[in-house]
Length: 328
Image 1 (cartoon, one colour):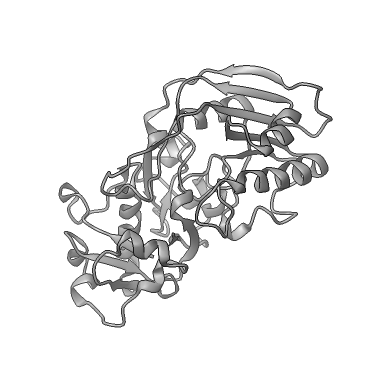
Image 2: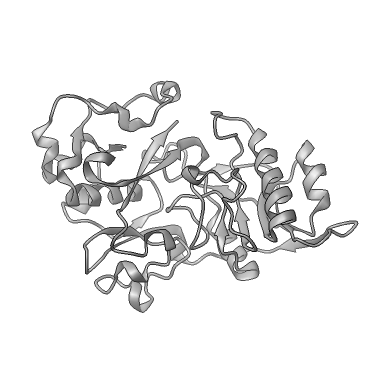
């Protein structure tokens, strides 16, 4: 996992817990891991170019250099303009594969609308940073597996536009919708809520026309990618089309979906930040779900324990921290 610095000069050497929802916040999480696992810190010779990342088909943790770098091995060496990385194996961390171009997250106002209106309990395509529910599937879980989604779940998905093995394109939308609707909804009793671009495509007629509800999102949505905007070159992605929230239920669909308008409310500040917590029992670093209230009693700084983590995948002191493993 490659980590680019600089950290903001105002941060100093101490770990910051309330962070912007950007690569600055993601880097701070990795910096906190480096303090817990200094033996896993390696240096890397300069930031790779965008062209290199596009050509790199393997996780960026393969950029580890053979030469040890004592300066980077110290906490002070991970401040300023140095670039460093962590070796997941050396730290005993759980690797979570992250495709950089597929991390445009559900906008915060949509997250809160979906949770308020449908109370989903499983996010079909997520990372610990972006998940909308306490339980979720990462790339390692492979949502295309027949049993990847629990039976009878209320599932939310902001589908990847490109298939898992492709760098770009929009063929993934139909691929993932087909599996979730035809397997999980129709044969496993799930309800599915999907955030989709409202465009003319084969999957629109095939699936949207057979949904139970279509909610037109009023206004334009900006999709931010906290994994890629460290230098604020592209703070968000604005698609000049409308978006819809479609709902499929296990029962037979009506002849025409019920049409509604979805009016978004201003999101809470916490949903637009990255919140870190240190367990007071085991000292592990945890990322609070973006939908969680960081001011709630057991989630407050200094009171937090892993057992109180709303993220069910990391709600035990026995579970190691995760490390994003970047792929282009």
